[in-house]
Length: 476
Image 1 (spheres, rainbow, N blue to C red):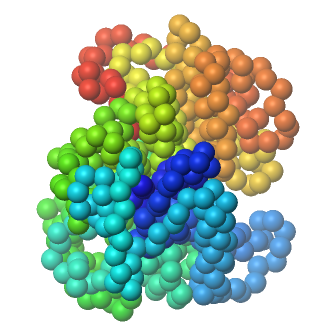
Image 2: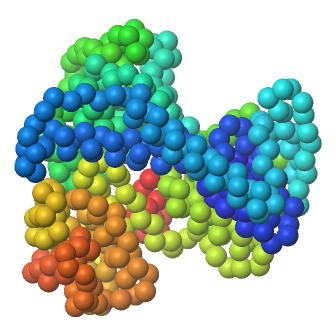
Image 3: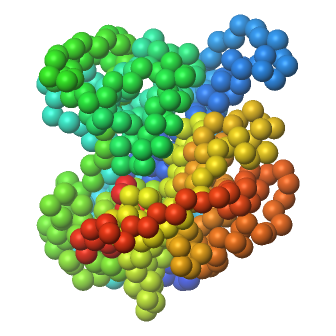
């Protein structure tokens, strides 16, 4: 049995069922979970529409006379909905082909390894399984701010369903969701203000990344309000909303037409009877698991975000691989994984491995290679030269420790570096490789041919053991 049809659970269902096992997936609302319906794919679909709009505004740069245009948000939404429907049909077809049973209903444990499903029409069904995988994910978190609930703010779900352009969108949260949707909405033509409680956007990233993102948003005329604590909210999102914030010890007022809350995630662990299943939670409310993703209840596993894994679809899929091995006698575990991540602003942010801060904390001497995107020939043909590429290489071994890119399609460049890291190749393998010209990946040649700066951090205080075990991906 699989409770929740997120990507990892969906792949688990198809895999186990295709091997002849009886599998049932209980899903409350979305075929395939949030990723193909309300998160990863829909947001990237809308973001691409926004990029097309940005090209219209830059048309003269490409030799096309500028003309007036307006964005039809209903058409943007319908394009997104067509894509979602396509993937829903693909998923349902895969369920049919694999033999896994998809059950649309609300499930909760009534005892160990037994789940009661309540169907939309009120009927119920009891199911028991030899193994149970919990894959219920997370939802948008809401702070306890006076007036927030009454304002009926947007989350990413409602923001991706807008059929009219907001006059002024206020965004609470300067992380992945907030920044991606803020930029897209601005490019469609809205006025946008982003508020963040920290002193810089994406504050867990390196300083050069935060600075580049802040400069990008300033250049696109997105208002950024940092070190801001929201004190109270009045009005209703979609009509008129007012925020009272505290910044630098002073109270200020911000007004907008719409409010988007993008300040983190909360695990979906309430109301599903985990206590009856013998499944314990962490102090943060996530399901407690070991390195094999086993919960405190024998035969019950948890994968994806609800298990506290880094909040990326590709991690959920690898979580399935861990559980598959755990059930079938393999040895895969979650520790020591090399986890990449990408934020799909335009340009993109992509990272894998160690950052400079982490290398210094671990007292690892490294060489820093860094070039501007303007040094990548393909980027100049696209007129997309904003940003940079940088990589950390261990001094004594030539091993690539980490890579960060802020530039056009750097998520694709990252994959080549990741493969080299997984294979244990020295950076010279990329530097001396015959890479197709002119492609963006070819930018790795000038990157690793540049003159590096050496950082000897032997005198840096060692990190705590717990910190030393943390991978870059775990920051999420």
